[in-house]
Length: 178
Image (cartoon, rainbow, N blue to C red; front, side, top):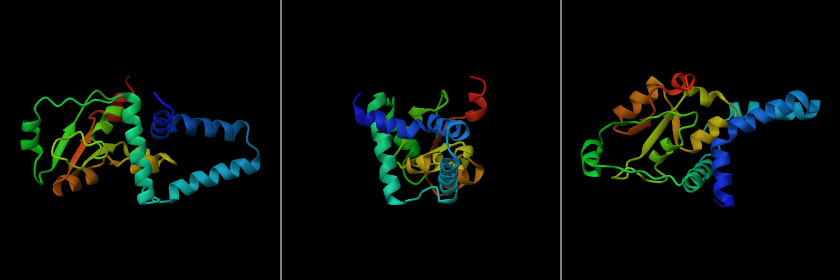
């Protein structure tokens, strides 16, 4: 692996560790001014819209996805792409469910429109736990990567609009039993 894929995957997936480090630093090491600065950044991240700063954020997200693909050597094998095209073609709402779930299911991002693994060029959105969209910084990162919260409203609106979605059944509840 080279340096850029390592940076890309760290920005995409490393926020759990980064936020933990920031919290520990703020609690035990930071001065009062540093604590206020960190708190201000966190509040700003929660107040700003998830897709902020718009197209630039999307470009950052796409870069992180392509770098993660290189880092992990992600390969997608579709056994019967003609049948997949028949089932998911046109304007039919399509659900791609995958397993196994892991703490961070990187294979799920193989459905990203950035790396175009699905035949027919479907724009597939990956749905992640809605809790992710309540955390500072993570909400922007996952929005930039093209994810949406896995809630009933999002699920039904995408299907009714004839769009495709991907998710891992079991989700957070399943992870707790790992």
